[in-house]
Length: 235
Image (cartoon, rainbow, N blue to C red; front, side, top):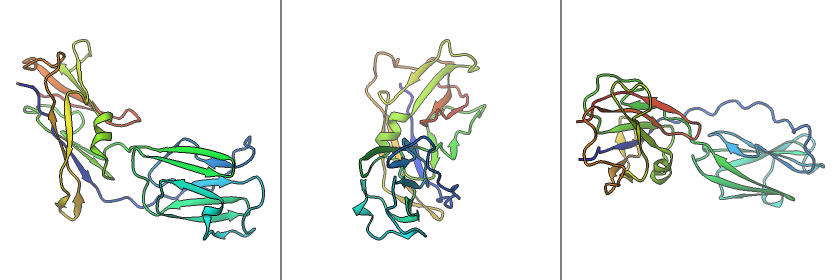
């Protein structure tokens, strides 16, 4: 019988918008520049530096940003001139994880990818010991995540007890389990988005019964390589 994995995505209360350092044009950059140029964290602003004056010298709101900048797909937020050459977009809502946004400003084209923050909580907890048979893993994120995206990011490592060394380890990936989203429901004072995973048809590398002394020892669920570990016998 295969190990059944259960994943739940719980939306935690959103954190307050962090204070962002003042925008600075990259020293060696020429022409129109978009900053950042690769990745976005949850509350990162996007700043466009023009090579010539395009806005009011003293700064102020930009009511018609479409004449200068395009963003696809659209995201709620506001454009503000910091000075005559610097236009900044601040999101009104956090950027969704694992999404891509295309920016265009004059002749500059940039595609920004949003990062997935590491889970704020995991059950079983990191380095948990003495666990019973592990049939569910719960991950808590600050924002809901698309189950298909999460399935691509998650891997589970199985090691024989005591879980030291990786010589006999085997890995479970999205080919070994399936993530399904459930309806939102109330959990205390926070709305929650949950998903479940069920094992797929057994593959050649997934034996009909896990080794009697195998253990769930770690999972990795973030682009940054976040890892958790624990040990529990799998009967």
